[in-house]
Amino acid sequence: GQQLNQSPQSMFIQEGEDVSMNCTSSSIFNTWLWYKQDPGEGPVLLIALYKAGELTSNGRLTAQFGTTRKDSFLNISASIPSDVGIYFCAGPGLDSNYQLIWGAGTKLIIKP
Amino acid sequence: SQTIHQWPATLVQPVGSPLSLECTVEGTSNPNLYWYRQAAGRGLQLLFYSVGIGQISSEVPQNLSASRPQDRQFILSSKKLLLSDSGFYLCAWLADTGELFFGEGSRLTVL
Image (cartoon, rainbow over all chains, first blue to last red; front, side):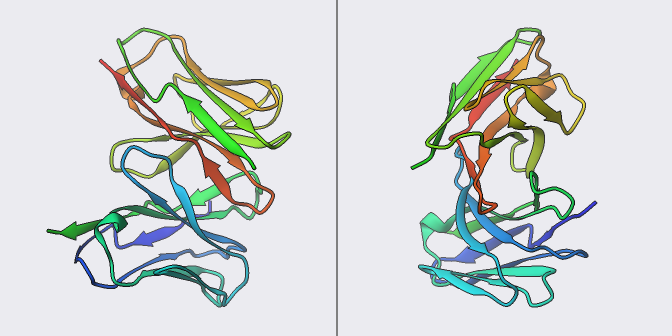
């Protein structure tokens, strides 16, 4: 079945640094979703991408829908302490509009 | 606007006891609803989804069951909890845009 490979698995960064993470697949996706999950809470949608090549920003966050439709990137500029959490990519499966395929998540940790 | 709520937020249950987690959605009709489980520090595992009243699809064999007695209500249950049922349970609904919106989560600890 379809899979999303998300990397890196975790990141240790200094406050103020830029962050980049990505999601790749061997099959195409028509929608890419990026979520953030704070500890003890449900994931919250950050950015949704619907067109190949699309570049969308949400404050300090920027995400891109890869032109091959097989990858997506999320960048965070000038990280701050509240950016810590787990970031997930997701997209609807080609054979089912009812289910999302999820990446395993990227855990962002800011060094004190 | 649409909202989704689930409860209880946390619970501690002994092995062998029953479980009932409830999820309700407001502001939308006939939503697709989902139950996910998340082990500590891990990704999301889809347990059940429902496209309508009484319609439940199970993704993995397990000790849990789901029911949808009303259009906007989705319930996760177990007759006898196992230690391995501990985790963070998330209810979600699917918008027409393909975006999934989650509830606040229910943390279950089985002792």
